[in-house]
Length: 60
Image (cartoon, rainbow, N blue to C red; front, side):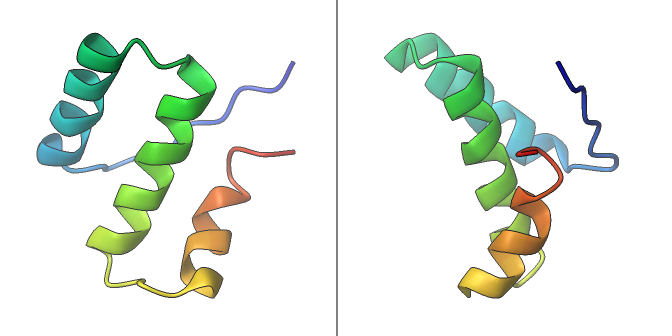
């Protein structure tokens, strides 16, 4: 099992993911994918290439 760490993710992104986990009962893997997409979009990456760059940090 691999463990990946993404540093410096803004608090508002963490908070939104925590709320979704609590309300929707999603899995940790789903939560991490949401987190990565939110981070990529927050960085201005609204395209698949930018998303893929961060997505590869989590998916082996």
